[in-house]
Every structure is written in structure tokens, then in C-alpha cells.
Image (cartoon, rainbow, N blue to C red; front, side):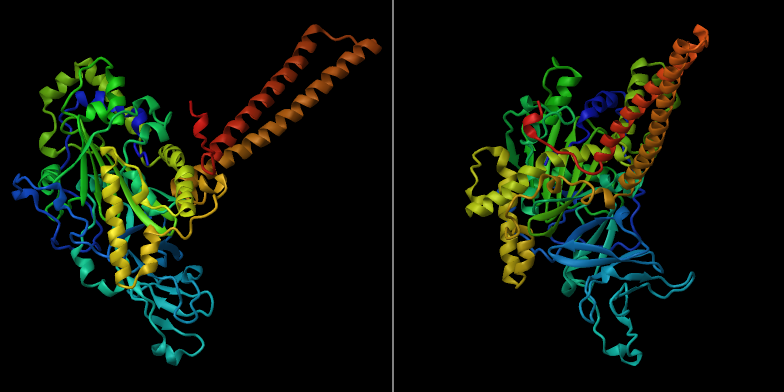
Amino acid sequence: MAVYNFCIVLFLLVRSTEAFTSIALPKTGLQRSPFAFSLPTPPGVLDTTHAHARQDNPEDAANTRNMRPFHQNWWPVSALNALDTSKPNGLLVLGKHLVAVWNQADAYWTVLDDRCAHRFAPLSEGRVLHPEAGSQDPSCIQCAYHGWQFESSTGKCTTVPQQPDRVDKAQTVASYPTIERAGMLWVWTDPATATTLSTTIPLPVDSLLDQYVDQFGNDACYMRDLPYGMELLGENLVDLSHLPFAHHSVGGLKRGLGKELPTRMLSQSEKVVNAAWEKEYHSEDHQVVLPRFQVEIAEAAKHDPILQMIRQRKDPGEAVTDTWTCTIAYFDPSHVRYRREREPGSAGHVELFLCPTSQGRSRVFLFNVLEAFLPRREGEKPTLRQRVAAAANASTWVASARLALIKKLLDPTRAAGHIMSHKIFDGDGIFLHKQGNRMKEAGLSFRDYSTPSSADALLNAYRRFIDSVATETRAVGQGEIADAVVGSAEYGDDAPRSEMLDRYNTHTVNCPLCSTALKKTRAKKARVKVLQTALQGATGASLTGLATLVAMTRVATLSLTPGTFRVVAGMATATCLGAIAACRAERKLDKEINQFLFEDYVHAEKN
């Protein structure tokens, strides 16, 4: 899936950073949840401090290296800003129904099975009971069926209203470890290894994203549910070559940018070298997590569609530079990262996180991260002489204005950015859903793909890997979990377009930014409707009055001055024009409202 939804203005950023080459990031100050696990370095997490450039074979990153079943992983399950601290929040991951509850005493999110131990009613339909202010008692969740209560942090039953003296006989509801990081709630989905393996596996979150979320808050996260499974979502996210075609006309992308895309799989030692940038500004406790697979685009300025577009808009005649780079990495099981860099301090990341909700369905989290948006390091702020020189330089003023405009346009805390993201995910939504259906109907799998191009190297590696993990997951008796990631049973008939591209239920209802914007737009439309009705009534009254005056002058001796006619006619004209303007404003607001609900996407109409 094309995810550079900021490419419409990214070329301006390239120009802007020319005057701000000293922009850099602080080395310390990462803010993390105090409840995040302290994770020792596990196998596969490398310290880049002493990395050496030995020549490894790319095949060293074999599919089976440090492979774990799907459920023995940290999965992002929800954007933190989508959770309500006052009530239970239903979740779905790997086909499991879970419920997130806010633990008020300790101020962190807890997750339990969404199933009461009594008669298996969903706890997400119940209510949260918080202790009184100042109390250290844990928050509890109360089942709506018979009132049984369970501690939010442990799942232990605390109340059986029907027989209080037998509460110790009630079963405990399974609980799951959680971490709050990068604007997302992460859950370890295997209770059996909650206190062992989970503490050794770090999250695939880099320090740049940590600082970005620190800068903009949890609203920096865009989340949407999708009508196809994680197997197709991951394929799409690691595929750069589809951008010019699937997203033609979005953000400046054009089909003409779809050209040769030579890629090369990196070796383990090359991954270490490529991760060295994190050393520049990570905190002491930050672990550099290496991807399972990573490719680089050869001559990125010439072949990467996004960098092509930026270079052409900047100066179509400029010589192709070999300093621009683009890499795409897959961090198992749930993260895809694009990194583009033109010069130090100008890197741009697209950070995507995948959540397999159930067969044929998935959830995606998106961050568009630009280094230039983050604070400079304390030790590298410009001197007084440099500031004076910059103030006298006209190009610096222009660059400053550009950067300010870009920050406004790409502000992740504004609903406009989410609307742009919708356009991109809508571009893939129809055909990926139907692809899953067609493959099921014909009995096809990814092994039947025709992929002769090196552009599909990362896609093939990804599919082989998750297929191997699915086999391992089934081997430990968790076939339903494996099916939630790679299964096709839920594919079938094509869903209505309004369902495949539904924005309200898949995003808006859970997004405080968009739900607030929708509410304000609807309120504005209501006011315009009232004004329109009033103006239409006033227009009718003015025209009736004008017609009456004209009739009276013809059948009676009433004599009116031209000025009187002009006043009455002017009132009628003004109210009529006002009613027309109000009607147009209402139609415009209807379009704005539909941006939060549903907009069809027909590729044949994108010319």
C-alpha cells in the first residue's frame, strides 16, 4: 500500500532543508511509559557500537532464524487515543476477542480475555468500576449479564453477587501483558509465556518514531481497519512499485513514474551498518532492533517513484544524484519501515504497523515521520553570527516559510492528514479485497504469483516467512491463530463498495480528531441549513412584496418612486443570492462530511 501520503508537499521539504542542513535530533530525552518493560538484549537485536563490515551472504537471514509462533509476539492492537478510560474497549487480534481496561490506580492499560468466566458473556459489554480518588484498589470490570466483577490487572474474580462466600471458587479471566509506546497499545498474546519470553522481545520501534510521538502526542497515530487480511496487507506495504499506478493522482503521483525498480536484499552486516543512524540520537536504554529483511533501491533518485517526483519538481534538469537513498525493511512480525534520506537531517520515514484481526481482515497504523519536524540538538543550535547571516539570506526566509507551511499541512494532529491517508488506503481497498476472493475461488496461493522482477524480492521473502511461521504456529496446536494471519476461509463474495471503503466504522468512530471534526462540520451544516431556510423564506416574501407593489401600481392610483422599487428589488435579489450561496455551502459541507464516512474510488476515473 502506498503510504507516502505527504508526498504532495514533500518536494518542498527538500528545498527547505537546503537552508537548514544543521537540523538534527537530540541524543537524549526519549519519553516512554513508566510501565514499559525493561528488555534485555535478545538474540537478533544487535548493538551497532562495535559492528564491523564483514561480508555476509544475504541468505543468512533465513526464514527460520529465531522464528516464533504468531501468538508469541507483541502486537499493536489499538491507537491509544482511540481507547476510552471510562468503559471497556473491545479488541480483536489473531482472531481473539480481548478487552482493554484502564487501571486508574496505576495509570496504565490492562487487557483481559473478552469472556466472563461465568457463562462467557463478553466483558466488553459491561462497565468499568474505578476506585474512589486516592484509593490504591485496582479498577474492576463488571459483567453486564450477572454482575460478576474481575480485577482489570489480573483477571481475578472479586465479586459473585449470587453467592459472595464462593467468590474464591470462580475462575480467573486470562490477562495479557501490555506496553504503551509510540501512540499504540501493544499486547503479548500468549499468556503462557507472559513472564518469560515476553520480557526478552523488544518492540520494533525506532528512536526517531519515539521522538516524533513525544513531539506530537498520541494523535500522531493514524489507525484504520481494512477489508483484507494481514498476508495481503504486508505484501502491499513492502511493495514500492505499485505506488504510481494504484495511487495515480494522489499527492502528485503519476502513472508515468512507474518504471524499472531494481532492488537488492541486504546482508546481516549491511543491516547493522544501515541502522547506525539510530546511534546519533537514541537514549541509553534504547535497543536497536534489526529487520528480518531489508532491501535498498539502486540509484534511488532515479528509480524510487517518490524521489523521482521530488527531484523532477525541484529541478527537472538537475543531474541525478547518488547521495539519495531509499530502503524498505520488514521487522517481524508487524512492522514495515521506509527510510528515505537526501542528506543528514533530512530523513523521512513511513512507519507502518500491522495487526491481524481475523481471517481476511486487518488493522493498520501509520506514521509519516520527518526529521526536520523535530527539535535540534542543544549542542548544535546556530550561533548569533549564523543567525544574523541567515536573517540576511533571502533563501533562508523562503525556506523557513516553506517549512512552516509543510508543518501545517502535514501536522499529524489535524484531521486533514487523515483524509489524505484515506485516499491512499482507498486506492488499494477494492482490489486487495477482491484479490483475496479471487485467490480463494481459484485455489491459488502466493506460490502461484508470477514475480520475475527484483521489485518483488521483499514481497516474496515476506510471504515465505509468514508461511513458515504459520506452519510453526500450527505445529504447536494453534491452527486458528495461524489462519487469522494467512487463512482464506473468510474470503468469498465481494462486499459492497460502501463496506470495503467505509471510513466511518473503520476509522472515524475511533478517532477523536476525525469524530470531533465530523461533529463540528455537521453542526456547521445545521446552521447553514437554518440560514438557507430563512433566506429562502425571505426571498419568497421579497418577491411576493415586489409583485404586489407592481400589481397595485397598475390597478390603483398608488404611485411609488423608483427608489422604492429599487429597494424592494434589491432585497429580493440579495436574499435570493444568499439562498443560492447557502445551498452551495450546504453541498460543500456534504462533501466534507462524506470524507469522514465514505467516498468511492474508481481507478478508471483517475485520469
